Length: 319
Image (tube, rainbow, N blue to C red; front, side, top):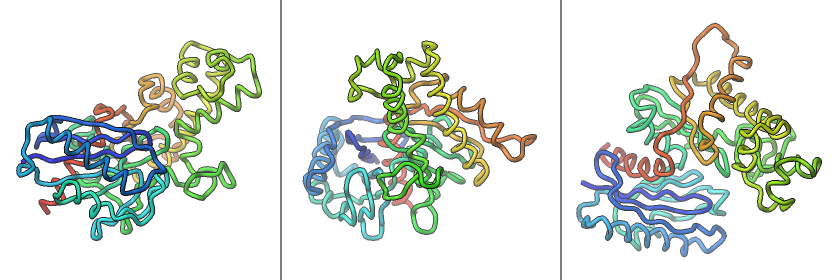
């Protein structure tokens, strides 16, 4: 049998046909464009799923189910999205709407959860009994896998690591709270810090790289400046990776997983990011003489959410 995975992000959505081994046979993408009517966005999801299916040469009869990864939480008994802040979705009937365009069983799960499941199934954390996936992008998502199965808690929100409070009365978050981990550890957080630096220090290297146009600033520009040895950018980058080290220490202290996997756009900074985080973790550990989770970069890249959605849906229909 084959499976369709759909990964819905804040900037784009992708759908692909996946085989039993997690190999993508064909893939299609389109911009997400949040803020449009829900039904229109679901129509786009159906369109790219059908496009990928056509490109794969696989018959719809050979597709067992569809998995959808969303940046939020869902109720799979009803097939509804409960809350998806970055897409402005609340209590939306995703399964019912999507089945109008491609009629197969549908399982919906958090995007970081499915990406973490993919890494645990066929990626860098394969073979680990417990692993946590942290996706560092526009937001900060988490996925927990224990004994080969995602753990989302009694009410489906256990992996919302980005919305743990890191700073009391801190930066306002899109979820409605203040001081969430996401506001200090995401790409959005790094960009905010970079803009503050550029405003306070107009002659800084980062401001020169963007010709003073703050709207052009992204996380890569800041990280590249730090990589090139600019002292001010390095100070900012080290401040940022201290927040990430604190986040990982929270995970270690609470769950003590075998491995923590870093994915998302910021993880493309590679060893430069990884080494800066890992060297800071020991100073925050409570049990300093005990081993702690290995920390690795994700290996499946942008396809992790698509693959994980498909493979998790496969597991769910088998149960």
